[in-house]
Length: 317
Image 1: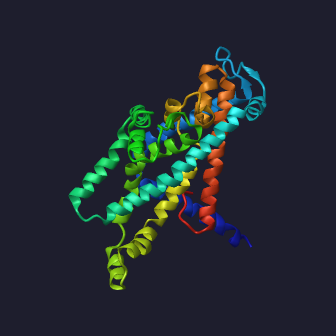
Image 2 (image 1 turned 135 degrees about the horizontal axis):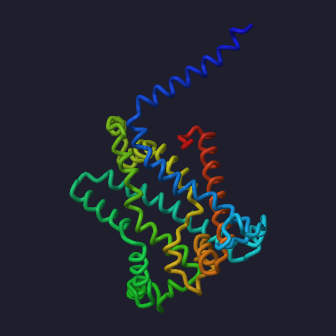
Image 3 (image 1 turned 180 degrees about the horizontal axis):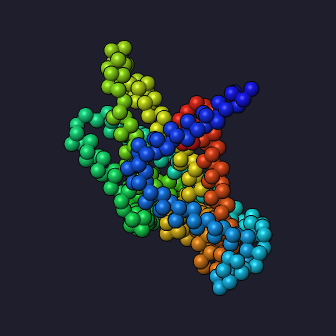
């Protein structure tokens, strides 16, 4: 009677010993990870105690333990504000545009570069498409404002082609703002985002392409039936990670390009937090908005991971 009861305990002990044996066998890697773990703890987890300000009428002079407790009043105030609801809409809309079109553009560029056989041309294109990633967003927005100005390059080109008669006020049209942000983000990040797909394509077994060619598959069919399935697992993992960042539409480009004429379409949650947290000294409200964004991001991440697991795809967790 007692023997079957000991087996789970022995199994658990064996697992613990195996874990520590593996840990000691990889102690160099563990030591190398310590600085990054400390960085994540100090800058990502330790500041979370400041979330208490979301439930207070926070006063910097009194601190988090001396400020007046207001419970959920800050959250109620947020969801009764039309501009905050607009901020949620704008954040999700611009994030989805960046996610969908940014991912498609990165995969398309990676596939095209993978099919190029001239090394010099391939490296030149890679360098040209990677460079914008390293430009400051201030520089990128300055370039965009000149290009899309009333007398800028885009309007001049469209007028010369006869597509429009009068200049379009690109930077002052509300319904054009999301599209402009999407175009700028894709141009800036498409080369950088394609790197991981290109590296995955290089690991695909060349014999698969040879077998497809023998079976009569042309270049397009090889891409469709060999290249794209070969990057499927990478695509799923990156998609899960990007879904977890859907509440991160950006701050710099919306703040720099935004103006009073497009405020209803340009203000994201991050801009809202800056507006009330710094400009208006409403630290409790700003913390509540940031907390809401983080909680939604966590829910989206775990939901995407759960769905991927149900579909028998690669997951993060």
